[in-house]
Structure formats: C-alpha cells, structure tokens
Image (cartoon, rainbow, N blue to C red; front, side):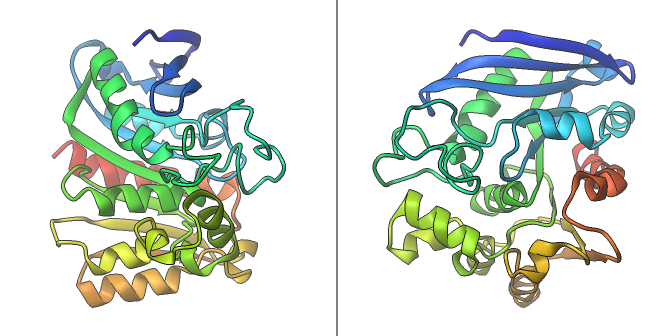
Length: 282
C-alpha cells in the first residue's frame, strides 16, 4: 500500500505529517494526518485515533485543537483520518453539508449509490489501523479512539462495537443517539435505508445496552452553551442513562459557557490526551 507524503512539520519535538493513499475500502484517494512524538524515534508508541465532525477534513483537528504538546509529552502517535470519501462522483454527494462529502458518519453504507464508497466504519476500524501498523512505529496492542460531534459518535460506536480493541474512548459533544436526532435520521436513511433496526447497530445509546462489559472507561465533555445540544442533535442524557443502567463507567462533564467549536476542544484536549495516556501507557 503506497503512501505519499503531502507535508511534514516539526512540532513539540515531533513531526506532524499528512499522507495520501488509495483506499481499498473507499475506492478513492484518502488523506490522513499522523503526529509522531519524539519517543517514536526510538521505539513503538501507542496509537490514538481522532475522528472529526461534519464538514471537517484531516486538517481541522491538527491545526485548531492544540493537541501536539500533550501528545508529545505522553508519547502518543495521533492519527486523524478524513471524514468521508472524496470526489466519488456520486450524484448528490455535494448537495448538503450534513450528508455525503464531509459527512460519512462512520458507517458502512448499504444503500445505492453510497454503498460502494461510503464504508468509513471499516476504513477507520480495519484498513487505516492496518496501514498505520505496517508503516509507522506503533504498538498494535495499544490503541485508543476519540472524536468530536459526528466523530464523537464514531469513536463511541467503534469502541462499543469492538470490545477490547480500544484501551479507552472519549468524546467532545458526541451525537449520542443518532436514531432520534435530525442529523442521524437523515444520514442513516440515506446510507442504511429505512429499516431502523439497521440504524441501531451504529447508535451508541443502543450499543451500550448489549455491550458485554469488558473494561471501558468513557470520558465525555459537552459545552453547556452548545447550540446543537439545545437543538436536540446530541442527546447525551439518553446515553448516560443507558450507561448507568449497564454500570458502564462514564465521566460526563457539562462545561459552563462552552459551545461546539474547536475553542471548546482546545480548552479540554489535554485532559482527554491524559485520559487515554493513563490506559495506553499503563
């Protein structure tokens, strides 16, 4: 699998790189970012995957979150994929900001015309980690995942659908119960069809109810002044209730005065990196 390096910048003693490759799952060219901390020069480091939200590319997190210092200090390789396939020439892929390009929702589509390319779930959980493990100094046994909004949904479902695969999971303002919110209904109808039982297999609130209970410590930060919280897009209370019932430990922090933006993420990113480092470096 040939990797083409697009950029490389020194940052906190490590290197922030961006690569391009031909994805087998998505059948298109994909970019992803990788931060290699100074520790990666001398040995294998844990891998931490970040999944971004609607409209984002691999660039938003690496340029706006300010995560590099914490990742450098804790010796974590941080991998940031794009949020959807690109330029697949599917009719309607660029018609709206919350479906199609930039809005893959981390599912494997089953409906035409999306099912050929829109396989972000398999890309994030299988193809990309295999690529990273083969080409970078990471320890395949030490892997965690986190994300924001649509990517927070992605991180939660990846962890809940694969018990034991990820050492830890965290999220900023995740879409917790997509089967019940406008974003989720639109995306799931388009990608998965009208059978709502299929939707539940990609809904964190539903997945928690059947999670087999292997150790998973969840951290969620949510801005109290997040417009999408008040609009009913995120529905964290449903997820918290499901976790409480299943006795799955979740730390949920409602942050006074914060919104949905990267300013919010930048404020608490070091806490999240620390949360993952606790398990990845144990």
